[in-house]
Image (cartoon, rainbow, N blue to C red; front, side, top):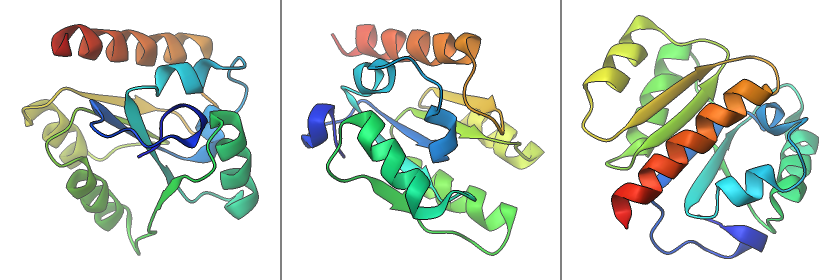
Length: 140
């Protein structure tokens, strides 16, 4: 999707799916640096378009992808799974079903599930950074 400053990443090495609020409170530049080789898709949350706009600014992106909202948690998880396709995935959500956890464990590409309804903590941001670093080493 989009890397630094809204530039399209031609071959992303991973996908990040999260609500815009997950990126709140991150140090300046953290999300942009982490997503240089990945693509982000935002899930609509209670903040609506204002939250999406704020996240786009934080990412330094002119445009961002937004995932459609589904009628149930199970349907939303199925949409995220389909979107992940064959790429490694970082998925941040308030909670995951056992089905989603099993899918993440069993799928071939690396998958990181992060349970949080609030902005990512420093520890969680560290987990994402390490995950992306491992992926980068695998593609070198």
